[in-house]
Length: 343
Image 1 (cartoon, one colour):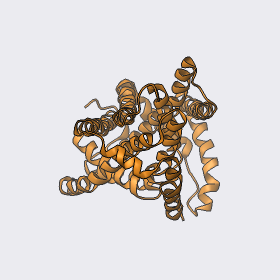
Image 2: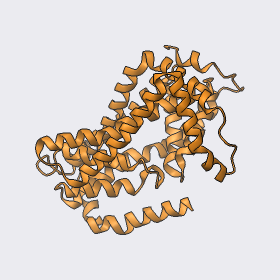
Image 3: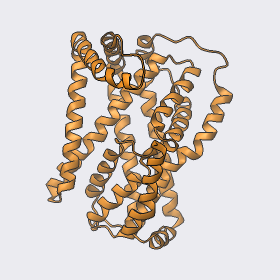
């Protein structure tokens, strides 16, 4: 059912919604008018954007190497971008690959948790920053205000939950027990075992998170910001290369549209937000003053350069991993010890 829903959404967007905004023949003509220098610079920005996330993983998972993070990132993202509920399968691939490199399950779980929190803080914080910048220039609009309020509410909730967990063992245990009560009916519907000892797990998790962040919070924060802003730069450069000028759509308006598009991806309607992101970005940028065909062309080029490469390189990354992975099962390391390493 999820696969059919995803397919229906993708067909509706590319078959009906986007053609209503821009004529695809005009879009293709705009793309083919780009010079080789423009295409080359865009490709370089896209490559840099891909590489930046390897540093995020490196910061969150002490003991991992940049080459290992590259293989895991490409293979897991390929799965996430091609399968319905691909994020869950991507996590499974992540566990399998890192475990074969000798990294403990506890350390990998901690890295997934921390990178998820940092990514969502940036994702939910960007609409607030964009709205503030637009307010200073007098360009704030109703839809952007709604997006910023959604981001603010989600960010506030995440911060409050994080503070409660990190403040003390007692509060961490209460949060864990509360989450267990919320999860219990869902797990019963799925015919899974009810949650047990989530309060103790939250306390252990608190110790591991504090141990990791004590020496790595700054590099993790900087790496996450650079990763998100590098993705934004791919979109901005694509717009400028197809002829959408600063006078038509300012960089602040592009940032606002980008942050709204990132917010949309929080809802996993289709793999990698395929179709949904294109529609959201195109609609927002056209509403901001951009001409339909060039805007749609830039959005499609941006998405091609950021969505497709992991799919193309994910297969080779998986094959390389199969040839280089550890041949024997590796005993799990202590998660606290691994998280506290500085290598």
